[in-house]
Structure formats: structure tokens, C-alpha cells
Image 1 (cartoon, rainbow, N blue to C red):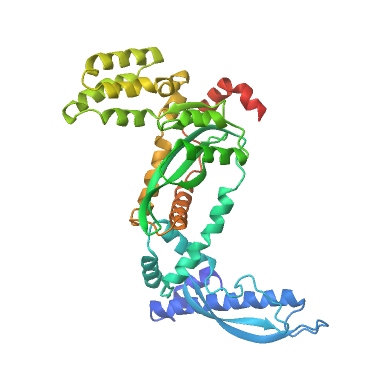
Image 2 (cartoon, rainbow, N blue to C red):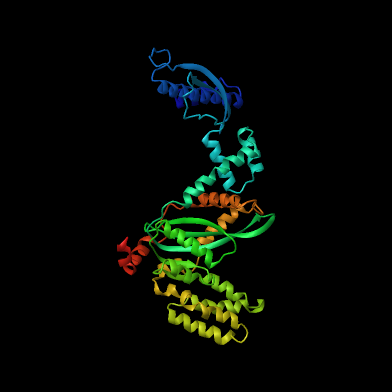
Amino acid sequence: MKKEDLLNSDFLKQFKTGEELNEFLHQLQKRGVEQLLEGELDAHLGYDKNQKSDNPNSRNGHISKKIKTGQGEHELKVPRDRDASFSPMIVRKRQSMVDGIENIIISMYAKGMSNSDIEEQIRELYDIDVSTSTISRITDRITADIIAWQNRPLEPIYLIVWMDGIVFKVRDNAKVINKTIYIAIGLRKDGRKEVLGLWLGKNETSAFWMTVLTDIKARGVKDIFITVTDNLNGFTDTIASVFPSSTTQICVVHQIRNAAKYVVWKDKKAFAKDMRGIYTAPTKEAAEAALDILEERWNSKYSYAIKSWRKNWEELTVFFDFPLEIRKIIYTTNIIENLNGKIRKYTKTKGSFSTDEAVMKSVFLAVNEVTKKWTMPIRDWGMILNQFLIIFDKRLDLY
């Protein structure tokens, strides 16, 4: 039946209610699937129904099978063969749910819905009963996808890699403790961002970042031009030990927050204004002059805040060595913090996670949802690429 015939008003008049029309469409889909199954069996046997054949295997009636789909629950007649070698592709053996519904369940889980909420939503939307244990089994299959994704080959070079950690509460030996998901985002030569991996550990340490960087290298990364990190103690040395040619920029926003911790509330606004003169300066020399002014005005009250700038000065001011377009994307870890914020949005309904596998599964699915939109190069990519080609021409030629 053609679409225009289906929509013809004379045709629709035979259905007195919307329920009757829905039932007709339901039966139409059911018959369509059954015809496809019959076609699959014809191909398996090598001859059509009612044809003669020398094949000792033949048709052996049908079995009834209930399948859950996005249009509700169907009871299908699935054809059989005598030697039980027929394995249909459209409705696989031991399959009770089509991929469409499974994908909907996984998407709901990725957006932070609990198994019981998903069960209720599926029942309301599709009039299908799917138990929480079935939902759990469906989402558990993601574990194999995580392993494959975590071990996939990476690009030989990344122009920039942003690195940061996000903390979750996870049950461990009858206690709920903080664990960190380590995240790295790479900027590829085509200007697109890529999450390089997710690694679960305890409190964020430079020693664990060594494990992360070693894994990245083992998966094919030869060079990283610029790394952007927080000011975790020993992080710069850790990066240099694995990627010695990489230039490390410590996130200025992290530095501002850390320095502000030492300042009392009534002085925060004035202190922040003086700090702004450092990171908005046009050159490194001008930034150092602004730091001198900050020290002159505030050192007597907040010497630790000033020392935190002095201690990390070289890594904090790396961005001044680059053109303005590159500066904007390397002086802060905002790119990875934006991802972390969206992960938090998807996982906020879960106060704590029962296992390491549960937190990895949720974060992986959240990352998948977010990165579906990463289809375009970053802003001003053409100009930024040309700047990288000029600055890193010899290293780019190597790969």
C-alpha cells in the first residue's frame, strides 16, 4: 500500500478510532516482519516455498515468539527448518527485544535515569513490560564496548591534549569512597576534539597520570605538542618523562581559584582585579610586571597566594609564546571542564555508584551522548592550523 493511499481520507474513514488505526498499523508491521523471516528461510534453504528441491532440509512449521519493539509487543510466527540450522538475522534466536528498544533503554540510562525509572517510562511510552533486571543486562553489555573503545588505536600526533579528573563516590569494600575518573581530550589535525580515554583511580595523583600517559603512548601516540593541565604537584615532570617534547601549560583558571583560597572575603574582589592584570597582559613581560604589582600590594597579607604564582610561573605563562587564537584555547582547561559539567548533569541523580564498573559505564555513556555533537572543527580552525604549521612544521612532517 502506497503512503498516499494510506493517508487518503476515504481510507482513514474505515477506522472509527485512533486505537483501530494503531491496531491496523501494528498488524501491518507484524506481517511485514513475518514476510521478511519467510524470505530469510527461503535464502537459507535455497528454494522458495512450494518449490521442489533436492535439499534434505525443509520447512518445519512455525513457532510463536513475543518481541518487544518501539511500537509495542508483537507475537510473531517464526518459521523453522527440520535440522534447526536456520538462524534468522532480523529476529535472532533467544532475542526478545529489537535493537531500537535496546538503544532507547541505553540512551535513557546515559541521561542518568535509574533502572526503575526506565522501566516505568518504557511501560508508559510503549506499553511494554521490561524488568529492571533485563534493563541491567542490556546496559551491562556496554562493558565490552568500553574495553574495545579504551584499547582502540589513537592518532600519531595531537596538537593539544587537555587533561583533568572528575571525582565520584563509589562503594568499595562496604565503604563509600571518592574515586577519580581521569579524562583526556585531544585536538586532532582536522581540528576536531576526541576523548582519548577514561581511566578510574583513587585520588588524583601525578603517579596515576603516568599510567594514563603511558597507555596513550602504547596506543600509538608519538607526540603531543601542547598539554593543558591543572597545577597538580609533579604533573609537568610526569608529562615530560613520557612525551619529552611536549610543552605544558598550567590552567590559569585553576591558579586563580587556588590563589583566591588564601584571600579573605572582603579582599577577594580587589585581589581578583589585580590578578586579572597578569593573565590579560599582552606579553609575558607585561604579565610579570603585573605580578610584581600584585606582590607589592598584597604580599604582606597573602604571601602564600603570591608564592603560588611565583612557584608555577614558567608553566603558567607558556600561552604567551603563542598567537592569540591558540592562547584562547590553551590558557585554561575549560574545554574539558565543559565536558565534566555535562557528565555531572547526566550522572547527578546517582548519589553514589555500587561498583567501579557502574561508574565507568555511566560516564562512558554520558561521554558518548555529549560527543555526538562534536562533528565540527573548533572555532577559527583554519587560522589555528596555519599557526601550528608554522610553529611545529618539522614535528608535523615527521608524522
